[in-house]
Image (tube, rainbow, N blue to C red; front, top):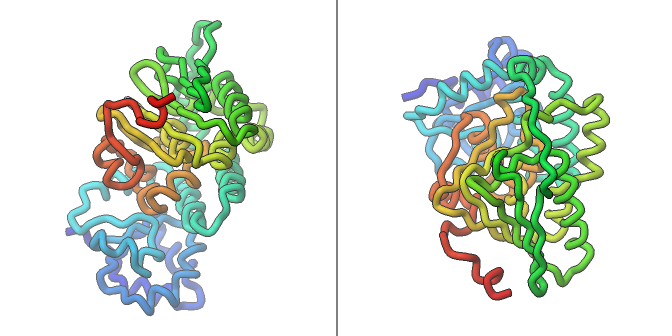
Length: 339
């Protein structure tokens, strides 16, 4: 059984005039709260204070609490026998800026539009790029020199009204580099301009997409310029603008942007070998390809926080149970096979 600050004591602190200062005096970036003693009326009365708390709050209680008022007081909900708590504690303690920034961003995510969510996410990501946690991660991971590849990072095929887009950097597990991002943006821009086009997105090789190309992280001249590049070349914004015309088929590693981008699609089919994760907090960052918007809309902010703060990966069946994917199958999707 995990011990935490009793819920009624937590509520009493939140009602005090200097609630934030009282909680920060505990001198920990992570607060663990036992939610079992929090009643609905109390939770509603103090939830506005929680939205501004500059720390991560983990709630201990039944999964049934996810849909209730007490869930608004916390960033992640764990069961009483939570084996994940030590991993979350270590992640938050080692990367307090990134973990807290993620928690603050996610708390208001359900009320933002897609466009406002992408702006807020990118601004937060850029801020963290200038911070000490990302600098420490970058210094500990020297960039590798890759051999030049003249091959296109995408394969495009038009069949009837279906534009089939395949990521084609298999040797790099389809890591999303600048060349692939720009090519994918142009392909999706073409599809977005024609309401008759549907998009089927998949990847070549052992993985759908292992996330952003780590060797390119932090290579922009400054975080402010990087922020505006993300907004101007936003793949997530294009996918969201035509979500009902996009289907993704994913397999192998679906990590970081390899999870964030397909989550914008109206339908995601996962192969049985698919694995999903959000490793960015461990780099001193947050998801930066739209995941705080796309994944939150699929599974809710508590599940996004769990993935990011635990460092866990989940399998295809778990993703299906959560609602992160819509089907687990080895079969070719019916509507794409018919064209």
